[in-house]
Picture 1 (spheres, rainbow, N blue to C red):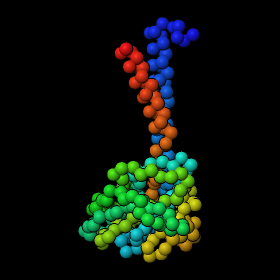
Picture 2 (picture 1 turned 90 degrees about the vertical axis):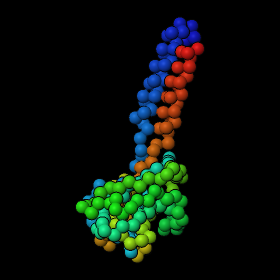
Picture 3 (picture 1 turned 60 degrees about the vertical axis):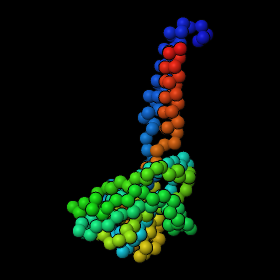
Picture 4 (picture 1 turned 180 degrees about the vertical axis):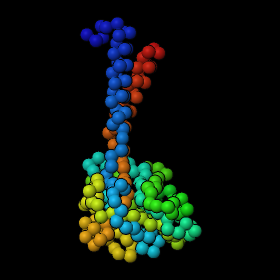
Length: 218
């Protein structure tokens, strides 16, 4: 029945269908938050140098995803002492930070303001594919002296926060709940992963539009 319609009408219908699919796919192409307590009330902070390396775990959902960047709540208490800040993605080994899987692009401690805590983004040079339902750690360290502080919060209500753990070289591993009970708390960060299915839908929509354009040219 559809094939019997005039070519101009068939092209219009197919183009409209592809365009609708593309429009529907675009809003879905957004990040899924797997861990976030970045906006929680601050309880205190730990120095990255001396107490660290510092780390906090997060766990992916059933979709997994590609990690491109993280945000951490930092402050610089000594802007005159300058060195680099390194952030790493680590595996989890028996509930503790494991081996390094990927390193984010380092930043100078001079990039971090001394006027108050703020969110700073650390990006990977290329995305790292995370397995589904798997625990990883975000580690922040400084090989040379600086005065960078990583804030922590006793608020466990953020996405993915309650069931995770924190780590400081000086204190070892604590579940986030135990850290709060001891008067501390998990380090403040946000981990977002692009929705895996979103880009497939966008690609499908784009493919449909391209096919329609090619047919029009023929």
